[in-house]
Length: 258
Image (cartoon, rainbow, N blue to C red; front, side, top):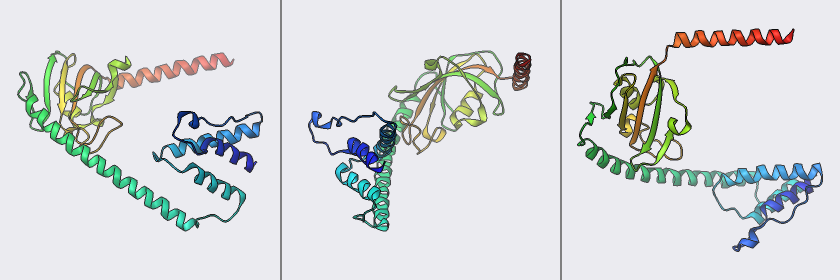
């Protein structure tokens, strides 16, 4: 079994040259359950290693796998191996921190310039907190409070127009407790009447600050949202409707079981 595992790993991790044809994996036969299991384990190993984002010496790595499986003395003690890995991860963390710092400084400079220009636009109001808002469509319904749950359609973009999230693109509005979202949303949505559509520009302090959020929102990002307030959710009625639906489903299951 252990030799089969080694063969599967070798097939996946074998050293490859610079030419495209040399990167093709050797042919592997999966004609037994043991072979399939070995390959499946190799797939997991490969996926885990890929997340490191570092080009490893596959021949050396395969040799280490063989040494472990064969029970022979390894070229590094476990203590030394742990030190090597720790040093690598510390260095990677430092590289990542430096990249985030540089991105944050760049985003801050570009964001400040954008906010200064945007504040001059006709129809834009800037609140004491720094939130920019502009009414695209003014509704006449009630205004929510921080304790309310609301239903909205929205689109979020970076200042360069890159869309990072949109309920419109997904084709379905979203409902959430207003107290559970970022400060810019909390403040902005409370300015709206149901039926309104507003454009908000959030400085980093009202969004995610110096943190990155997901793959597209970098540190110190200014975020732009178009938000349509569809409804203030009647949570009592919602709970009653859910309880009624659950009771109907339970009754149906009981009837089907007879």
